[in-house]
Length: 235
Image (tube, rainbow, N blue to C red; front, side):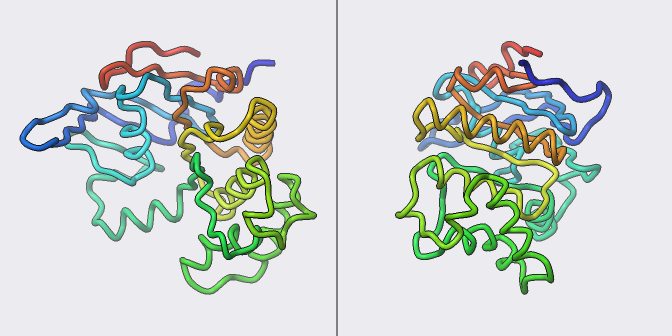
């Protein structure tokens, strides 16, 4: 069953005329060339394209991990380029969650401790944080593995820990960089079914970079990049 799109006209983020230029030695490389993109609340948006098309660069800008050379971005009503570096970091911690293809779990921490880590990095845990982390791990099917370390879990289980960690701060937007790249077909579909279900339950917005055509049926919208520009957009 195809994913249902959010209501037209709603807006969580807007990118306008985004350019990104890198220097490779003395040569300027245009990674992004005039990207205009609006992200709606509750959307599952895939950014696709071949290697070198600019999808990772665009994802990093959406996730406030990189800054454009030119252009503007509004996230949750805030003009990102007008913020100080510290204010931008605060917005990233408050509004965004991240899922990485390599999971990025701390090997010496248990699943529960890994999920709580983003909150610990903000300061002292609040009342109810541990219970929420336990609830999220149960929701992703890991109630029996809360005390397990990553080396005792399969790839699919580690990615589910990473999903719970991305959601612990109740973000408006989760940025997922090739979340199925290190998973087999069965686990890829399990992870995507889980994310689609969480989107419906929580109203979370997800933006993916991917070259995995198997997961595109879960998306509400697909943007194809070519040479740093949006070439095709499918709804």
